[in-house]
Amino acid sequence: MTEAAPMMKKNVTPTAQGSFSCPLSASQAYRLGVNLHTAIVDIYTALAKKCSTASEQETIKAMIEQEQERIAAFEKGFAFALNCELSRFYNSGGTVLEEDKMAQLITDTRQLIQRNLDNCRAHLETLEKEIAATTVREQTITVVGHTKEYARDLYQRLSQLYPKCEISRAFEDMAEMCR
Image (tube, rainbow, N blue to C red; front, side):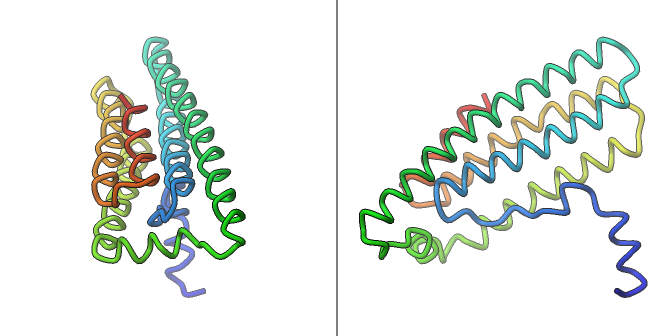
């Protein structure tokens, strides 16, 4: 390890420890949603620890509960999509690899998809750092609360970057759940 590595390791936020990679199947899209909203819950939890009033804590608690409901719904979508993918794989005699086909279909948009995911991760990291560095005020709760809309917009953009198929429908479904 270089001298800078331990310092960088200390500055890495929990979100930065994982990365959001370009989904190539509907189950991967739902897994992305689970990971994204789990990171949002972590941000809300950090925010709740800094709240000074019961009103702020109740607001954050309600936000966490909403995100946990979304995560549960995304996990159901993940399980269903994965079962469908496995069924198609086995029905084809183990020869159809949908991920390979999707990778070929999105060669033109893959970089844009990944850029959207990287920007999302950077947005979450910024929120984590701001919460760690500041005291909680009503404006902070409001800004962090807009993360749901940010996620919805991300899902809508991603659904448009994929061909119309199960993966784009998964993103449309997740965007709808973020309303």
